Image (tube, rainbow, N blue to C red; front, side, top):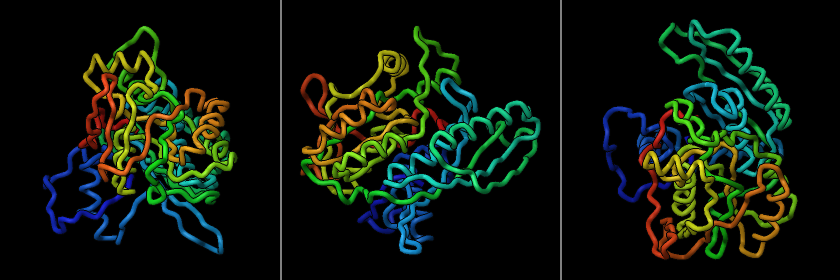
Length: 345
């Protein structure tokens, strides 16, 4: 469950569907609908960030969990093991928390090659060591052949909150910064799954973000909100920000960092780079006065070399995100219903 939950004014509204669709897992409007209808009333949830922050023993801790069903489980630039660590530690990092501990739950399909499992576990070990997080507990289940496409992974993570951030802190006059090129993870997985090739291979940006986030926090800049734009990409991120803070967001199309290869894939397949998943990018919202040092700090870090300001927070229209196009017009950035490519993470 991801994103900012807005309690709808039209209380009691029923779901549009009476059965679960793939799109309900895409992080978009159908995911939000599912949370509002089923999970939020059951557990008293009102606001959902990437991690829950709670105080324990006089210290604020962040807690998050995520499941990974990516298909295929090996892809250019990573695998489901690396992805499971990165996805969870990144959800902690963008909540301003230093990742500390992970749990690791594995659902394995009968017939999975042991060599594949060993490679995935080695990837988990390497990635966890890179970010300085420890796998402290786990579980393994095996299901019959055909009931799981090789391997599914669930991870949960706990981190120590260093800086408190959240959508409620976003204000008009803030700027929106992204740490680098958009859409690389989604296109890398898509190309592997569909057998699409490009002149230059697209590699997933899958990476742990805590080092980059810490570099930003160490500048002393006033950071209002952060998010890693995974399922649904940048589109869902800015829609969540606008909705959660009751502000407007305006992005500049000319400022969006999109590689030639990703742009070509999107043109070929009729996709929008804004809505394609990333697994190694962070979106930061901060006062305009702090934008320069945030961008400069990002650009000296290997994961932020192409960082830039891509937009601003505005008063109106409240709860809505806009894109100023290359020809000078504006269009609404709609929250995707689901995602263009299911099982991207």
